[in-house]
Image 1 (cartoon, rainbow, N blue to C red):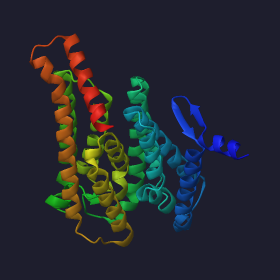
Image 2 (cartoon, rainbow, N blue to C red; image 1 turned 30 degrees about the horizontal axis):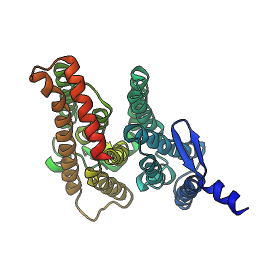
Image 3 (cartoon, rainbow, N blue to C red; image 1 turned 45 degrees about the horizontal axis):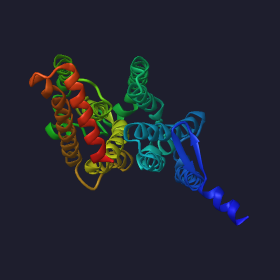
Length: 328
């Protein structure tokens, strides 16, 4: 009997390329239960219906999906499981669905599904999933604008500490809300043009950096962003940390900003002025932007040196191998 129990505990099961033991499964059950009990006390704060229940289920599926993304990018089973563990009990994710009934997960999961499909090589499906998520996000934000316009009648910020906390969120509202969209569109088109002109190859590492950069950039410069506008970047920053351990501070800082935005919407005040959190977001944006530039520049350097396509591929392979060894 003792031998049977010992063998049962240490036996490894395999699903695809993912292996786990009984203790791994037991820990997964425990952390899943912890996430459920974390949500139960706050579910009565708003009406509980099929939409909220469905959102909570999708939050768990999103955690599994993000674990798969980390496993794909790093090859580390422990990091993949740690990602699932953290996301199940992530306070902003739990609050978004169980507490507020905003249920942003309905479109956020499409973003990460698209990202996963993209790095797996299904690029067309990845783009379709991402565009579908964008369409749903725009529709949901438009729905919430009616309620938020009452709480924030004349303000370019409706809960999220964006750029307008720094320059003044109540000044020239009718002008800035249009100009800001043009500026944001210009930034995105310039970024796309530079990538196309330099013929930058979108590797999984670069795709993750670009994904996080856009997740921070868009709500930072777009007007009228609600308090949960950082939902996608919260998760993307965690995935980025799992890939680059030296960027451990990014998910911590972004979670502080997101949680403070939630607190501001719930209580009407925060421990620090919202402009402080806006400056923190600007620092995160610059940090990720510099990482993105360096990653892209590392690809264009061989071409500038006159290397052939085969030599560039060999050079890129060496860099990826070295990066994998440094980050594992």
